[in-house]
Length: 457
Image (cartoon, rainbow, N blue to C red; front, side, top):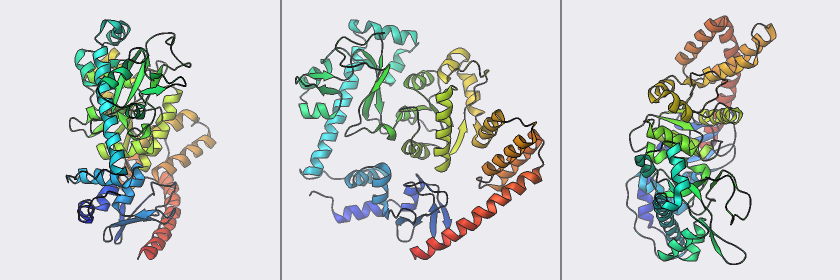
């Protein structure tokens, strides 16, 4: 089995401090000689995940997982040892030599070929968009008011009929195995090679390094194409494959990170991101699917200081907001929620808002995005009648639970004062409830950390 030298592996390990690496994924706090946090590999409420800067190892006393920095990156990113080595080498600006021609290098070679296929396919689709046969796509982008610069920046394209991409890739010298590995082409029972995307507006998906890893395709006609094998939805995406896992990437992140950003706005779809970027909101990204995943949350945590959720105001969007809030909060992100200054009855998304009111007004909404605590208070208030004593008690109890999770005493004080003033509740009553909760949590955490420190020594 081909491998890198022990000396090189050791150099990469020493160049990636385990606390620095894990801190990009987990909110760590020092306790004695070690750092502790909530384990990213299983659900827990008390910190049992320990990182030792002296030994350069991690260990979870809850689920038992542990190891060095390579083991952590492999598990958290769901990749093999070679890929984790490459990722950490890139982080440390260390150039890796080529592997020998064995199974590992064959896998890496196939990945490189699929990346090349995706790159060529993106250009092929993009050039198709300007051909006379793409009139339906041209009319759509015109209706959505997308300019040529935006079309080029995001390499927006159009997929043709039946096997046009397959034939093009064969002409470029790719093998059938390589083409099928990309999942851009399927082989049917009759041995025919059929393009996965046909007669759709195409959106290339890039990873944070700018490599095209997948595609999304939007249907442009009311009825599916005659050669469709089964009913199809408005949007279809690339199947997961050797270079693509949808829950680990964000659409538009590469474009957003071309400039220094301290906050990222998450919206729902491709067109939301593209429309916002064209109109100057260049820090917008979209999760590839309605629900934000933990892997995407970790990617956001590594990329910026503040995350703003701007999902649609409909039922699905609000559910996605709540799921995203919990994921980002548990990862230690500074998370905010976008509030568009329109009546709830209008229920417009950020794309519709910016077209109606312009980027300056949307930017103001972004700057005024409310905190997690404010959002939860707002949602809780909507579900309760604060004129009723029982509802007011429930309101106070739930608010205390939320405030008890805040580490900063100053932040806790500010929220307690504001809530006391806004809802005519004494600050002393709020703190009494908070302190009851904190005392129980403090005792549990103290006992757990003491036990963990004894075990790790």
